[in-house]
Image (cartoon, rainbow over all chains, first blue to last red; front, side):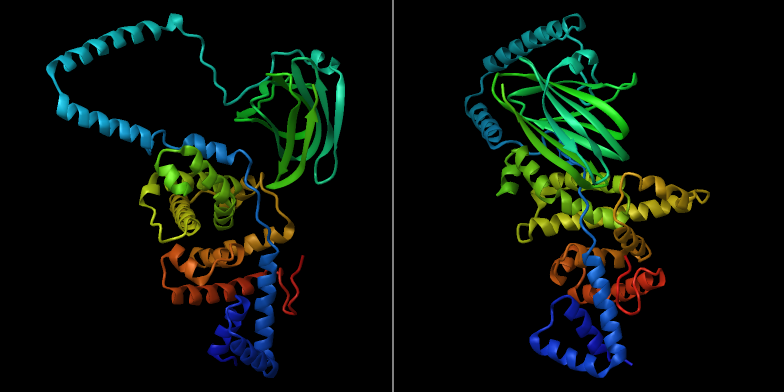
Length: 261
Length: 182
């Protein structure tokens, strides 16, 4: 038989919420009551077990997805608010019909200009940047680029290597990956210096897709495959690429490489 | 500060809030619903709701408590909706669906065992365990998040612990002689 007040003290003890006096009373009680001691040890053991469960890493692209889904104009910037308030005030004190005619005339001209400029014949085809795949550079061409640095990947459920290649205008990362489980590969770069050009499958005739998010390209991989990610240089400065491989919510590999001009 | 910047129209300030709290929100959702993909969807829903309601955020509370509150409510509503759906479709084989939903999310065996035991708890009990043991929140914070008196939080937590302990022992994940089984 365990008194209720001591059961409560046991839970408080596990939560670190007991005063020194309460802790001492509990310890004395546990020493004299084997049944209570057994219950306390089981609860403490369970608490330790729960402590061992580590947080899981969410996918790296999640923040970008959330930002993209936010309502466009939920909150107006202060400057816009001030401008609107100022305009309203000005109109209230200075309104005259001639301004209405001028506004209507301007609006008409605007509509006509918009109709002309928005004509389909004048438009370039729109691009869907959410999924890009590479056909822009022949894979043989990429394979012929000179490798300047190789990053080895080993252990933790993924193995392989990344060959970094560099030309005057292009940086290419040739990835040879071997993983039984699905993994997510993120190649991050500074958009001031580099722009994504293409993702190419080097082994198979099937296409692969990269999700392009600001400053990074991501691909999902499983099995044994080779890819080439090609980036265009925007200026001749040294550039840095960061590689991150996540599987089952855990970071399996993380490395950065600087490529000199 | 960041909240004020968001309300002034600086979306990037909200990006900073996402960066700070997305892992916590994602893990609360994951522990409550178990499924990796559902946890991602819930995390998105929580932050979008937070953004929409940001002008109603009461600055007397901490932002993290508020976002946890949204995360728990969103996850509990999701579980209730899923249950209604399962009841409507009695032919659905839930056990057959489960492994597919876990494909992308492989944790250690010990973590999976604990997660399986958690799923056997009532959702109200699961929520207090998650907030106390995984998020390490105080009774007071949990009371605000679950909108319950602190006394109720304690009694619910104590019952939940007792039940979870029995489940872990029954499933063979915890031994009577105190050692966790890995």
